[in-house]
Image (spheres, rainbow, N blue to C red):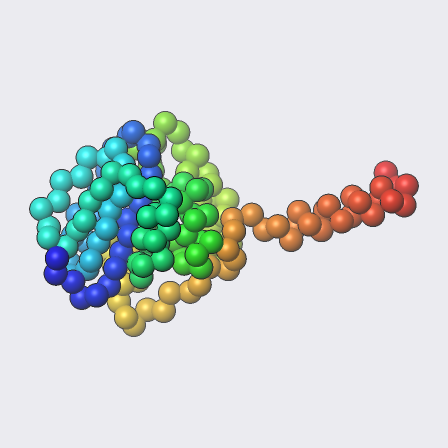
Length: 171
């Protein structure tokens, strides 16, 4: 496996629909000088490049090991994958499964990404060029704004207010 030392872990998830958008990005990356590990799930991915290691699924420990060992993690917009990446203080690079391309049963991934797009917890990737610009050593990748998806401070504030009102007999 040839490599410039830059490790990329690509996560397709476990949806049975083919992920055309991510396939195109991975195919473009596979011709470059990166060490790429791809969890392709049920997607059809045919790469002849020697710098890609492909597998369908793995256990949680291996999944976390691959996240930790990678310089970049490119993932579908699944909450579980994004959460795992954030929990290990890495910036998720997220590709949305597009319902119009039959990559998913609906557009809930797009809705999720749109809702959290300003929170600084991921970077959306729409093409190989989008992602490749971050692979340059001249670009600094920000750390995620937090290690979880939901801003728990808002929930905590509401909960404290609710408890305070209960204690003091206010509605």
